[in-house]
Picture (tube, rainbow, N blue to C red):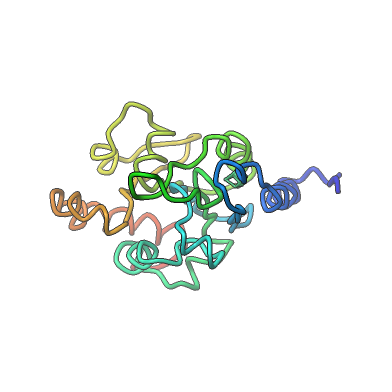
Length: 203
Ligand code: SF4
């Protein structure tokens, strides 16, 4: 179906339907992809992370795992209701699908074809106020050759919009959090304040 409206809202809905039907990586993955899409074109925050986990692949709900609980509960201090409200967050990753396990352990890197085909167009169609970038792979995409350890402590911009960079909240990153306690103690409260302000919440 071709949408003649031309409005960004309708264009995004059309694009999201195309993403949900995408199976480009089926052969690479060796299993049926399950694209995850959540958010409206008027979402206030565009959150861009690495790729869905296996648990997200199985449930179809982004950040429905231990990383998501840390992100919402310990970092953002917001409810599930606020997090999954598509007018609040546009939740997207460098790949819309769980890419499978890598031979050396951990998950495979997100296929580049996904960000090339879908993410850049989603970014044009979502009228977010701020970006939150999560994890080294997403940070590297937007800020190549820069270290996430430095980026995590800096206010940056993408497309002229304020951008905050978080290391991945995964338990696999525990050492980084221990090595940089000032991130949890000082930087997270600053980023939380920006998020609550955009959402119109009092801390
Ligand atoms: S990861 Fe992206 S490009 Fe690959 S099948 Fe999923 S939606 Fe399509």
